Length: 184
Image 1 (cartoon, rainbow, N blue to C red):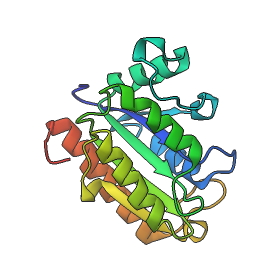
Image 2: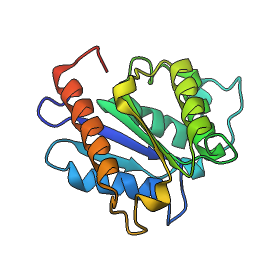
Image 3: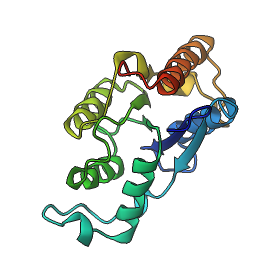
């Protein structure tokens, strides 16, 4: 673990160039530059479809590289939209590849679901992450409903309440990582 500046791997479930979720991660990466290192992982759309029964050793190189990146960081930050009452297929596929490993087991993970409504995707993401062993907490789990009215197309948080809850969540997540807390 990085003592003074935790390393986070950020994954956006929205992969379009205008994704609000990607914009939120860009905003957080800039805002928290002095407190943590946030590396945004942009290759989940390049993952082949998950096929059960493939051993970790026989997984494609891009999957091995992704799992290594997850293993090397102090925490994970996932920001996802809601598509048809669930998380996007590309994010689900990426998380399915994790099943053959233990890289998410007890890995401190913060999640943001930013969508028009988002409740079902938020529940789905929490269930999937619990299933793969991620360390979650209510304090580092955020649902931003009505995202179009709270985040601008250039990635600025335009709603003061959303900015406050994002700040509270990130500060708590980073603080817990620095303490090595089991309370994540």
